[in-house]
Length: 355
Image (cartoon, rainbow, N blue to C red):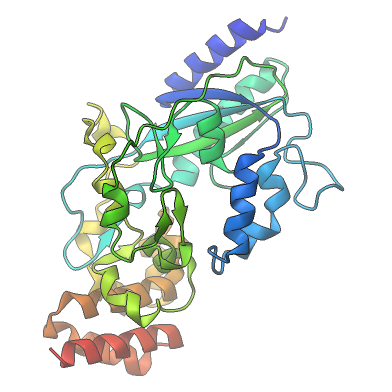
């Protein structure tokens, strides 16, 4: 016998907490409207850069019951009635991880969140299916605007830096969603609480924010070091500083991220991996494809690929201002198999030689 909606939601949230999710919420699986207009305007302004998949999957992003090639074909979950949003915090200690030069965004310092969090969301979806409800889980693996659904589900609010902020947890968290045919009582959205604070906007090294809650992805360090296949535009390279993969600048200054870490933080799958203590940017630049594959296994840095990480490493070394890195940079500028890496290395050599 299936559980009544109220009991089902209570049991569901208990199961989610047991899996390690700290905050949960529910929203009706109806099309996003205001969010869809914002996304269309963002795409029209070409602020997505090379992320063409954002435009190609627009229909499904704003309506989880539609297919990627809507209106034909099955949707992500055509029978979806509810969207369950799950939040799991990751380590956000202030100390540097790994030898200088080179920093990695906090979310990428441990296990790949797609697996660490996604597997738990899939376990929750299986639990729902055992209760007789169709369900499908995702953790940044399908075209769903997680932050928008999280805001609708009352998990948190979207701050001026476009990150979801969960009072009591901050913004250093991973989101997962479960689409389900179960009719669950939706939770009330939270009000936006940034007030007059603009610390995040002011802290962006590349001035990527056009306005509050409006990001030009093409200038964002996370985009430039992960999504973009070419070296960053020259005027932005110095501002990348020592960010090897991703960026935490706009989150580091957010008052909501002053919350103390959970006591069991070191046991979480996002605890820093020893690999960051063993290799700096110069090591990354030297890696061939096989070495990088071993180095990046089980980590989000696989997204950038060997060439992308080597390119980033060259820019980081150029910004480090240490002439001892000239030999490895000159070698990459002459011999690396990727033109983007060679070009970034040449830029770094010129920058260091001029100092």
